[in-house]
Image (cartoon, rainbow, N blue to C red; front, side, top):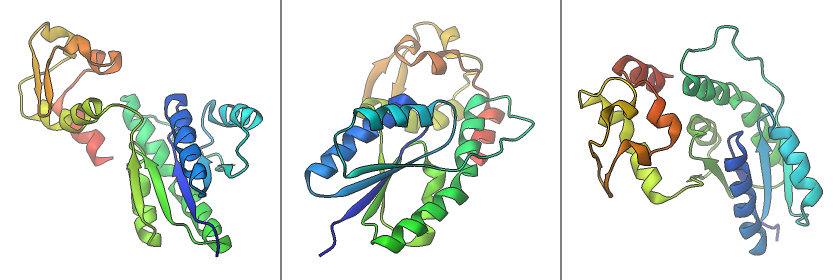
Length: 200
């Protein structure tokens, strides 16, 4: 009987790759082999090399996806560029999954929560897919509600400008903007930008 195999697909940040590796160790502890494809962006390949040098888990393997050509005219909103970059990796990710399937069946793919565009690839190949978020449930709840929050309220401009006015999210106690990550506090929220991000 062949051992089970899962694929873990993280985004390119250290705070996402390292927790994925820790999750991989849990799978290995249950006799499941893991392969982690990593986008060839920024310092991600170097981080993988460092992890490999310090790892004693032979059942965790890494695969660096081919480098992509980034657009010449980036979007003014950095988060849109991030999602566009991950979407451009879909073809390489598809090829990787097909190649992996030839050696042994893939039991499932665990996607980083912000690699949502890769879900179309996994659905196309008929592989079970799951999401992983390297953060708290409260953070997950807030992030899921942010787009709706700002499109249904008359908040324009950075969150830091609203002072101590409490932000009300379902499932989370009232909190002020200062409790949110600095990038969210400084981000200029406008309806066109949010809609543009969602359409990307």
